[in-house]
Amino acid sequence: MSNFFKLKENKTTIRQEVLAGITTFVSMAYIFFLNPQILGQSGMPAQAVFLAAIIVAVFGTLFMGLFANVPFALAPGIGMQAYFTYTIVFGFGFSWQQALAIVFLVGVVDIIITLTHGRRAIVKGIPKELKAAIGGGIGMFVTYIGLKNAGFLNFLIDGNNIKLLNDKPYDGKSEVIVHSILANGSITPELTKFNDHSVLLALIGFILLLILVIRKVPGAFLITLIVTTLVGIPMGVTNTHIQSGTSIGSAFSSLGSIFGQALGSKGIGSLFTNWHHASLAIITIFAMGLTGLFDAIGTLIGIGNQTGIFSQADTKSFEEDKGFNSKMDRALVVDTFTTAFAGIAGTSNTTTFIESAAGVAAGARTGLANVVTAVGFLAMIIFAPFVGVVPAAATSPLLILVGIMMMGEFKKISWENIEIAIPAFFTSIFMAFSYSISYGIAAGFLFFIIVKLALGKVKDISPVIIVVSIFFLINFVVLAFMS
Image 1 (cartoon, rainbow, N blue to C red):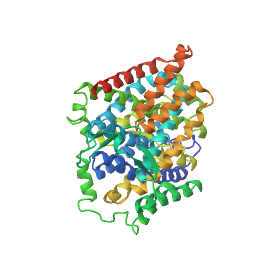
Image 2: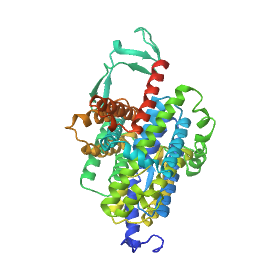
Image 3: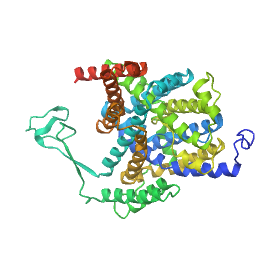
Image 4: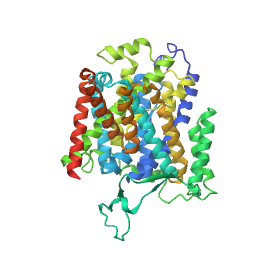
């Protein structure tokens, strides 16, 4: 074991790696309860999603530890969970089976890009400020979802501003059961009155989480999830009734209803049947692929370089060599293959979790820590019957704070430089307020081109940005004529 993981070479011990692996597990365990909460809204069975996330996390984390020998754990990313449900399913109108097919194709595209070293051209072709704006914008998106799910925001709609009622023109006289409303920009958001038990519970959970995180308490997210769920019992928010048919056995049975659906007739088989869906699918695959690539590289470099897990030789090999000799190269290979597997297994895109930093801070230096973390993930299966017990008020605070943390990317942007600020602003603001990571990237790229053309800096516009922007423009034209 010591030789396989090169413990002496990395100046670590078995005990140190085990303790660090446990630390990473405790820091990440909350994600398995958050995943079914978000993806379940798309119509997917919650228990099945819970198990799918565990299976994928165990696969990716073990693969990362054994193949790349680095202590970075993988699991379905929060930003991508939100993207899956709120943008792909709710926003674009895809079924969850089609959304899983898109996740699978994102993994396949990323695999091709990674194995052919095309990622190097993409990374170099997109300015670092736009990459930072994408990361920070996803943070705004996730925080906004958390605020809405917590019930902290209400939205006022005047009858005169309703455009569509149940997807049909509103004449101001119809009296029907309301299924959906489309209004114009006159909708006014307001802060809730905090007189609802669910909202109050979410507020209690958020305050508790803030205190624990500020005090740097290990496992703050998991502790908050558990405590808020328990506090919700006397408040009448937590549903303590565990329905029949929610055993571990039934959870595995329900897994069959989502496993492999991405490759079936309702998944990839129906994804490209018309131009409208096909164009949206292509745009989404590009956007998710780019986001996942930046996220993985950012996390790996950010944590690995600071701690010495990636040496200068590793970084140089990643940037210049054609092979896969560096730890970073191998880590990216794992990241992409795991996302492809996620689509097949039945969950959203995976990512290299920033929470791995907790384990690294505790001393993790090799893949042995990942083996320990993966064992912890596997043990989470026993909680499958309790997935439906955790209320949205307990998970919303986690979304809010994770989003806030992701917005730290904004510090990498030179906001005083208007040439940089304009595309960066539209990238981030459109992600949150259009409820779409894709449209945020589209806005950022298009305004980047406009700014550079206005300044006569055509050479600053890389082929990558031009190609992706053309796809976005085609998509917008199609949407305009299809409406």
